[in-house]
Length: 133
Image (cartoon, rainbow, N blue to C red):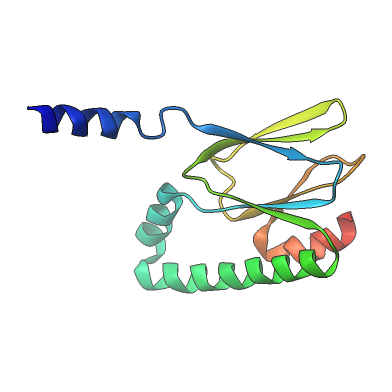
């Protein structure tokens, strides 16, 4: 009975308190949102498992290109794990923009001092970062 109770508590206490991640936009930053389990399931159902792995491989390539661009241009790069974070707050001086992680799978948000945060699909991240920064 104790084992059942412990398992019950653990199962229902996981991710009860989802975290909020605050991003300091006074520094040029690229924030990569990961991928949720629901999105993975959706792609696999819609396009099949093999197609998912092809898409994921392409996304990893775009992510790597974005990271390389950020490193070359001294832009801070932050990864948001959608299993741990449910909201990202972009903070710039006295303004805040709250962005839910839901619906932002495989995106990169750009933020910098005095600029509005901007959403980019990961495929266009480097091109959009070149224009933004």
